[in-house]
Image (cartoon, rainbow, N blue to C red; front, side, top):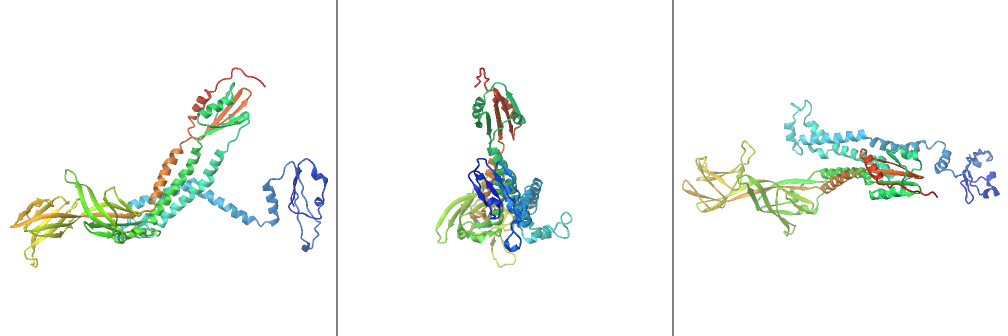
Length: 532
């Protein structure tokens, strides 16, 4: 049983009719506040024991007992049944303590960095046959690493592998735990403003000084002019500035969480695909795009048809390719053009969450006329040679095409601007530019290169995590800059004409004394004082 008595309130948590405390008394009307706490063990009548056997503990004080004490008394009647509940209450704190451990967070980030490095070294998204040949069992890399490790751990799609996503989730949990257990309490403490009422406590700060003849009001005005928030109460002063620097670590953690969430969305919810399309043909987005992860979900834009109107190339003076362009039209299910744009490298097309990049080019066909007949469309085939430069070739048969040894005119090209022509014997015959209409005569035949038809290499991608990642990096840069702001606190106490000043800061500790001395030098000295 718990009683709390004061001149105006009388409260009983339990009332025992046999207790003498249940009888009214004039003593309750005294002006002095009395706190009375009774600890009773009450027996029910069905227990067969007298209710008169009561053990009482009474304490008198000038104030009511704190809530924590009252709660502990109430919980004492459960007979030790709260031990398991206490463990369950302590368990989350233990988990948070482990997760917010700095060495653990460093280990997590190091592991993620190592996995990302492996993802850079190991080719991603290749066919199984590629890994069988590149990482064979009979010649393992480093003596043990074979294709079995790659497939077992998902290293062929590292950034959506369970081990990588699991490490991201663990690091995110550590960041949230650190924010909850460390950063938020620090901000709460920093936001509280309190006054120090003793000279000794002020002199224990990182910086302390005494002005023998100075006014605390003058100091407050000077601090306000320097950007401090100033609070005064009687002879005490408290001032601070740079509180945003205390919020910055929380912002950094949130920015890192955004980056990880965006990266996870990109790895598990994207579509990707590539296609090479000759000029004048079209394709449907959904036929090219393929899902990357288990969260990938198609949109209405996947039904859009892409038509390649024209493909062109730009060249340097040396003849090397400098840029290539694709004139694309997007059409809906009814064949209506909804968007048209000429794309190039680093200038993609975006529609309905799908981005189309210009990534490559190829030589599709060559239009040739012979003796005024045609034009004939000759398919250009890539020819593999030593070196990185592209080379394409085609063949125009001459004479009986059913003969066992068919002869013809060979044509080679490295790009779309010039064609090298060889006669029936394989000898060099000349060079012609497409659309020049200038014929070249070979064994009595007039050959005209009418046009060179290129193919555009396009890469299509949907990435729902890109906006989140960009927002995370933007927030990270901003909060990182804010974190360099110093949170400075200053206390002062007026003791007669003497002013005791002290302060501290969390950053720029070497510059803080110089700043304080600069401010204190501005405080005017009292020339004449009056005593009240």
